[in-house]
Amino acid sequence: MATDLYRAVYLRVTAAWAAATERINAEYARTLATMMQDSPADLQREVDDAASAIDRLLLLLTPDIRQWAFGVERWYRSKWRGAVLAATGVDLQTMLGPEDMAAPLESHIQWNVSLVRDVSDQIRQRIGNAVFDGLRNRTPARDVAKAIDEAVGLGRARSQRIASDQLNKLSNALADERRREAGISRFKWRWSHKVHGRREHIARDGKIYADTAAGADEAEGVLPPPEDRPGQLPYCGCRGQAFIQF
Ligand SMILES: [Zn+2]
Image (spheres, rainbow, N blue to C red):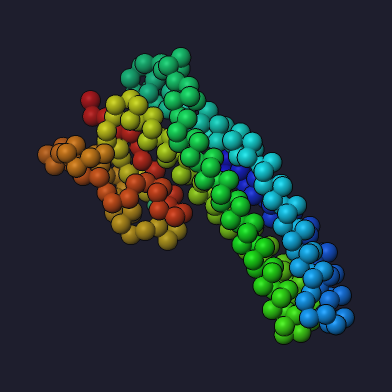
């Protein structure tokens, strides 16, 4: 599902920048060869044109982000239903719907709208730096083209990290919301087993936490809430699992 978000949304923006690089490279080479004007207006316009075409694309991506988020909700809802059914024999199917999750869905949709814009702005900034620093230093066109490729490549790599992080953040938010909705105020920390895991998250693996300090119970091994929640910190892949003691 992270790949779906990457392909349907982020990749389209990085691909649009990649498609614009040929014209920007050609304009750079032309400007460098004819350095008559003090202001390279045509080169600026080429970068601006690419950016405004991509700005229009960004507006079209919101429905795709929305569709992805609702797909994650559907998937998580069926997992939650299955887990509750297995644990309690109660089938919640008719009682659960996407409307219960409106708040986390909306906030994650808006979050992704701003993240994808930020990815695009960062690529634009890097391309702008490459061409205008290039002109100032009379950098050969092929070196500038390489720097532009790198700018797009960095955007692509960042997008992949964001898409996987966003999937984890949205599924944790949905898990938290479903758990609270069910009146369960305890969760088990599940470490992601990602390489370079945070030391304190590895230490929390398998421990039981309460939502509030008042809900902690030392005798039962229920700890007060940790400083950060599962999946909350950047690129944290940990999960919180609803916990009930029968
Ligand atoms: Zn973690």
